[in-house]
Length: 169
Ligand code: B12
Image (cartoon, rainbow, N blue to C red):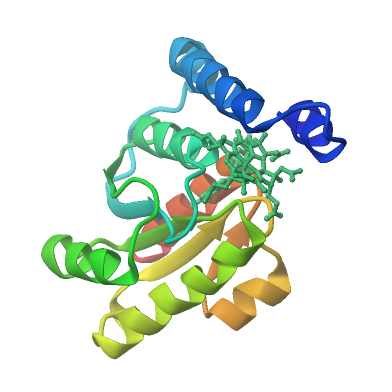
């Protein structure tokens, strides 16, 4: 996918190539799931997950979801292009321990902030841990957005979530 991104940058690939690469990657991950993720499902925790408003990329989100499920998390996947209000409604309904947001477009970092703000406005921020993932997330953006943790690696994200559940006893 890194090569595909570079070819897109250099105008050798077009959006259709991104779509095709995305479909191939999703299918490959689905097939490889049983051999890649071998974690034992001992942890019990609930995650509300989604790719934030304005962003349609979901391959990384889906990898995180698969890994988290294999580790025993119940994951409510809201899909892509998820409005802050939809996150809020699901958090109210499910009362998860964790909210996980994905963004691959730099501009979607603003949607992450809006989602955290919406959780604050709804009085739900203190009831959940928030993790953000995707290529553009950094320590600085994590602070600005008001999340508790960030990562560009799905496995690390799952490890952080497991730690949160263990810490909570
Ligand atoms: C495939 C792809 C698409 C596909 C997406 C298909 C799909 N189902 O996701 C399609 C064709 C839809 C697409 C569309 C567009 N794309 Co695009 N796309 C890509 C591409 C080639 C790969 C992205 C990808 O899946 N990478 C592989 C995954 C596994 O990596 P990842 O998402 O980073 O996920 C990992 C971690 O970040 C982390 N992670 C991710 N989410 C989460 C969440 C949590 C909670 C945790 C813990 C971890 C985590 O775990 C994953 C594995 O470790 C990238 C290039 C690149 N190198 O990234 C461009 C790229 C992301 N796209 C780009 C652009 C510009 C677009 C378009 C605007 C193109 C256009 N002109 O229309 C549109 C935007 C549509 C929209 N509104 O979202 C730019 C973004 C630039 C920027 N910085 O904002 C990129 C970087 C290409 C480029 N070099 O310019 N794209």
